[in-house]
Length: 438
Image 1: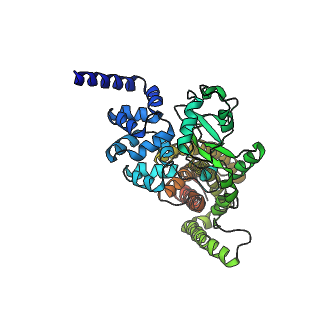
Image 2: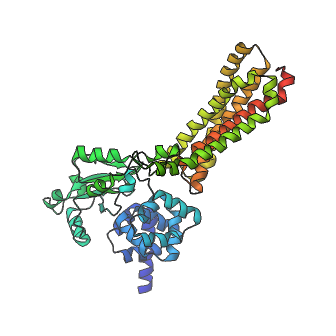
Image 3: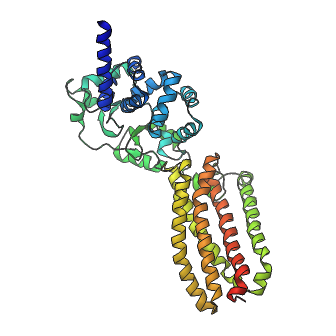
């Protein structure tokens, strides 16, 4: 009889988890971590992942640390990568490392990237171990839990929904003077002040100073709470320069400063200048391959900078958008084909329009009918290739563990110059006689 009763209870629990995963997540968030593991492990993995996704992040992180190897390796690949990264970032580094090794290589790499923010951004400064609550929790629930946390740095409590979105910030002093039966949702009186994880450090300083804040919540693009920036952390970190990426894009070292020693500056800059020189000679070699064609049709030399310039601008536009997307976590390495396809389409459409304009100008400039065709077709080809290169190069560099901001521009310049010259001079050589170019 007892067996039948326990089976019936288990069926009820299973159906509740299946039909109301969000409500189930809220309910078990108040249980002990061992109890949560018991309920989660008793469900099919797809149901378990849905319920686990809605558990309070504080609790879920602790549960993740205590999961068996088998459960973790089955459940975490089913979570949204951003959620998985947020949960893992709350754990100690040693635990994070051991857990990441249980995941597939591609997911392991993706989660590492999501947990890593550039030094000049708000995300780099966050403390992910922040205590969160739901709007339905009572003041009594909060005070009871805070007594167990014993963190003297807690000055605010953060209210989130089941998706992890930040709903409000309540000062601890407001909780202390409120009725124990009051729910937190009634104590939220204004929209919380928060900052995006990829915002520059200057914005963090500005907000903390203007609003006289001690702690500043940090959110992602979906308003999911990632953690908080504590004032003392910011004070210690503001000594770093926030312009490192700009230096890196032009081949200067990230750690070079205006008053750095001459020897240090030379050591950081010279290698990139040598690389740039090598790529310039590569482009010159391409031009040299068509020396006879240029000698025969000297006007081609006049229009070489036009083709190279337009393809260079096209590539730089695609490069800027892609690097920004990588920095803001909008795209990742697996999106390379989608991004490349988009930039190819953009490059082709822009190329056709620019080619028509260029062809008309060249026709009235030279009076030739063949040269406008050559430069028009070349413009389309080179702009399509430049757009694709601008999208793919930073993604490839990121995938190989290189800094896209430091290397992309030099590689892109080489690609756009080489293919711009090659398409223009190559077409002029192949089609010159047929189109009457002389």
